[in-house]
Every structure is written in C-alpha cells, then in structure tokens.
Image (tube, rainbow, N blue to C red; front, side, top):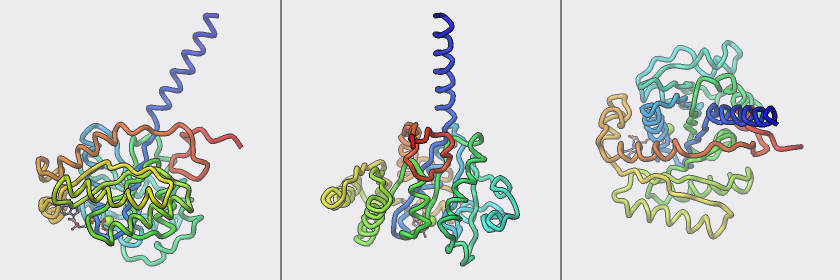
Length: 288
Ligand SMILES: Nc1ncnc2c1ncn2[C@@H]1O[C@H](COP(=O)(O)OP(=O)(O)OP(=O)(O)O)[C@@H](O)[C@H]1O
Ligand SMILES: [Mg+2]
C-alpha cells in the first residue's frame, strides 16, 4: 500500500515538474501595420525578463526584420541561414537587454515571405530544441493575415491582438480574428488597446471590437491591457531601447509591466489542440 502511495506521489511530483518546465507561447498580432506589435512584444519580453523569466522573442516578420534594429543588437546569422540548412536555430540566437534572447529574421529578403506551409511547420518544430532553455516564447508577427501570420498565431497558446483607435485597425483586427476563428478554429483572443488617450478610450475601443465579434463570431475576447499613447515609447525607440528600460516610470511602461504581471499567470494548457504548436512535445496529444 505504502509503495503504491509512494508511486502516486512520485508521479504527481513528475507531473508538477513537467508543468514548471513548460514554455508559455504568446503570439503578438494585430492585422494592421504600425499598431505597436513589436513594441508590445519587446516591452512584454523585457518586463517578463525583469521578473526572472527566461524569455525568447521570435522576430516572425520574416520579410522586414526589425527587432534587432529596435534593440541595436548585432546579428551575424539569421533565419535565412537556418532555412538554407547552414546552421541550427541555436546558432542564430542573439542576446538582447536584460538577458532576453532574439531569433532574428532577415530584412528585405523576398523569398522569406514566400515560405511554404511546410517550411512554416519546420520552423515551428525547430523551436523544440530550445524547450529547456526558456520559460516564455513571444512571437512578434508581421502585419496582415498571410498564411505565415496565421500559422504562427495558431501554433501559440495565447494570441494577443494589438489594436489602436483607428477604424482600419479595428476592421483589420476583426478580419484577423475572423479568419483565425473560422478557418483555424481559434476562439480565445486577448486584446491590447494601444496608443489610447485615456482608459475610457481603451475600454470603448475594446467595446467596438467586442460588439462586432460577439455578433458575428463564436469567440471569447478579453481586454488584457490598455497602453496609453506615450511620447516616451518613440523616444525609447530612437535610443534603440525599450520604454520599460529607458523610461520605467512612464505611463506606457507601467501598462506594459501590468500586462507582464498578468501574462506571467496565464496558464499553459496541458493538452495539445490537435494541430501543430510550438513545443508540442511538452503537451499531451489528444488520443487518435
Ligand atoms: N503606446 C505608444 N505610444 C506612442 N507611440 C507608440 C506606442 N506604441 C507604439 N508606438 C509607435 O508606433 C510606431 C509603430 O510601432 P511598432 O513598430 O511597435 O508597430 P508594429 O505593429 O510592430 O509595426 P509593423 O506592422 O510595421 O511591424 C513606432 O514608431 C512606435 O514608437
Ligand atoms: Mg513590427
């Protein structure tokens, strides 16, 4: 009897260990260009790193890489070398501020935006070799609703949708949510209202998006951050720093840190969704 109990305890122990090991994967999307996806990605990354998390950021804007430029870090090898089979994913990682690690993309390489679904899947699988090294993966996606954006979003556990108060941002965010829902089966979305002039404007912006989503789609959307318009974000970008680093007390920094505190508590699901996901090996696959 004792033995059985002990075995049970051991199994629970192993299960708990496994849970702590899991990598949380957050995709940052938005539909429209210039809404603040890269700033949300990097500031969330740095804020989580400041809380002691080991953070990897994937610059998934494959055609127009910019995270390395935003941080002023030097890149020697990038994703094009990985896809050409010249190196492993591990070999292209570069260190950024506060110990965050970046997977750099390429800039201005046309064939990188024309990857096949198989190549997207290969890239997603390549991350598995890094499972032990990181607690969080943040995927900064490109603007638009290309196959590439959709595949990376579907392969994440949490999809952040960054919106700002412009009609085109709301319609593009809605279009993205719609295609991810109808064609890719996702139903949970986390909204970040960015560059708003007041809390109220952020809430109204969310209300507009949720009104159309509730009416036409079967989705659960949740407002997870309201980030004010803050000149310090631009100033920090010009200094090639994140705002949470350069101006930690500014209003946008406070909002990013609040988002990071929340994100740190988002649970990592135990089971896989039945499609390709980052670090799928860590999840229990549904029975065939
Ligand atoms: N909260 C904010 N307050 C003020 N300016 C901001 C804020 N968030 C982002 N910006 C500015 O908006 C511009 C676009 O930001 P960013 O590059 O993060 O957007 P993006 O969605 O990643 O763009 P792209 O679609 O080109 O990748 C930048 O100049 C940035 O400094
Ligand atoms: Mg960007």
